[in-house]
Amino acid sequence: MTGRRDLDVQAASALVSARSSRADDEVRRLRADLRLAFADLVSAQTRSRDLTAARDRLRELAGLLAKREAAGDAAGFDRLRAEREVLDLETDLGVATTERTRAQATLAGFFDDITDPFQIVAVANAPSTAPLPELDVLLDRANTARGEFLALRHEVQAAELFAKASDRRLIPEPEVVGGTKSSTLAGGDLGTVFTVHATLPLFDRGRPEQAMAAARRVQAEARAEALRLILRGQVAALREALIQRRASAERYRSEAVSNATEIERIARVSYDAGERGILELLDAHRLAASARVRQAALDLAVRQIEIELEFATGWEIGS
Image 1 (cartoon, one colour):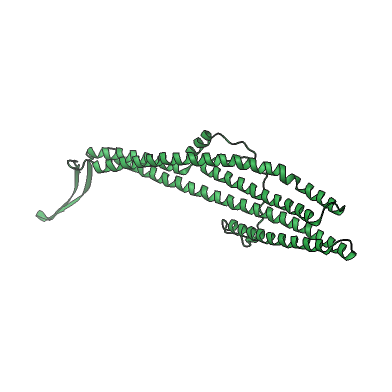
Image 2 (cartoon, rainbow, N blue to C red):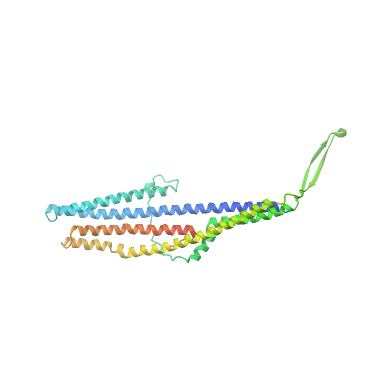
């Protein structure tokens, strides 16, 4: 009659919603970890592919130098130096292959139906060029998408409902009880009995419950404010880091990687013409391979920041 029981039920439902919101955040974290594992595999595949191509080019060069040496047109030093460069690249390729295997195993751990994780191949997408929203827009998005924020709001709501329910304890709630009554007097008899009674809160006025509800509300509000301050700094740092890493990756791609093939070609022509030595030719091959591998690392760093920013704010980065 006082509505206290309904308020208790609503408060309990709010707490259930809080737990559900936190569970949603855990699922989002799991998705982010899955995407990070995918990005690691893409980067490892790219490094392996680029190092394999560089090794094969140097193997071809070493074989050509061996033929020239046999014909007396090249020095043995050139062949030995090229073979040493091939060995160094094979060592780097072994490390990259190990990293790719580890990334495949990590990615397979997110699924239960993969029998051979080492057959997993990740298909890479083009780097994202979508503009970043302003900081306030990202924070507003995080305020409505992050499960912890939603959970704390539900906890504040539950505390307010518990406080209202404790206030209703001052109002007596009558209870009607019905049953049967038997008697052995004068031969015995059996009849129906109805009673009405109510508890008067002379001493128990719900003050402990009110204090507990108020404390829970203050605690939830304080945690929400602390999370808001922490998230503001985190999102600002992630956004700025993403801007800088994107610019660095694009600048390196346009200035270093795009010229790598041309540097190799010029060095090879100059070597064949006798204008450059073997060390300069191998240095050109090394610079080209290093540029491509470094670009893969830069692209991975960009993708990692994008994923963390998406998790922190709930904003999905477009292509």
